[in-house]
Image (cartoon, rainbow, N blue to C red):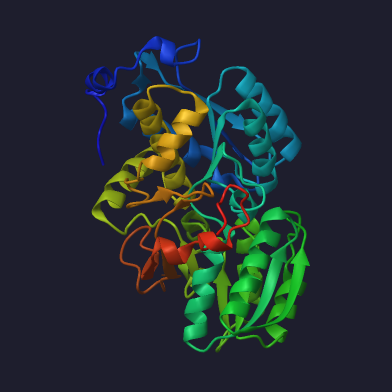
Length: 401
């Protein structure tokens, strides 16, 4: 990873950045908008704050001789609050908003960014609509989406003969997006969906009835089309009511800190797709240990995406010589993403930043040799297989034929 500290002024001189190329305030202003303390704080919270700070620090902390400003905004998982605060932020000089955990909030803010001609980078929400029918020239989707998390586990299990599924689904925008992606993946793999049960998002604490329906279905695989506490509560209930034998569990959105909270005894054997694992490479380990020193835990894929998305944006502003949204977005498309999160990632025509994904399985307690040694990386899924083929995209920006 290229370090910018100590060489920012020389780089700025080389690219001839001058004050007239920037907005009247002559500074770069970023806002992290996420759930800072609520039900999905694992997708935001202190981890997101520190990841964005680390990206700004590693870039050099300033651009065009001015400090890079960061605001931290809590949308409280409410789309109306997200839209209101995004409008206020952009009107107050914010150039880019990042994270946006909660798909409904992200989709609302994307419309504001388009109206204000500003940049938004979605790292904390996964709805396929973001780069599908709701795609926008102003919005880039980083880290993961429903398709990338759904397709790989389904295909891998189908190859081993596990083709019948039962889904526990969170009844809100993201959970339904995952359900649709999983259902398509099951059909493509030649499998069968024996049934589904839906639960309210982040409101159900007793998952007993859902677990019993799933286990009694007889399906070979129980898939969890939910996230955050809904996923961990589902896993606990399934374990309590005796899932076992040949019946498997797949979590379609699971973060490493949620595994830490569950413990390996309950989480072992779980399969899922992940965009980042801290212990995969020397570079990811070095960066993750720095993150650990600040947060007290290892980073998840959203934290790494926040870091990468922020850094990619700042590099694009530097390369463009302006904070004009169109020019910066053009550079973000043109420049590859090479950092601790992605190797040779790229922003496609539909504004999805595509990169390799990883099929992982949670280790048993006996397999784990040190703190946060939680995952076996079973397979690297190349970007072209991990994400929806461009020719199947519903994004109006994609040229057809």
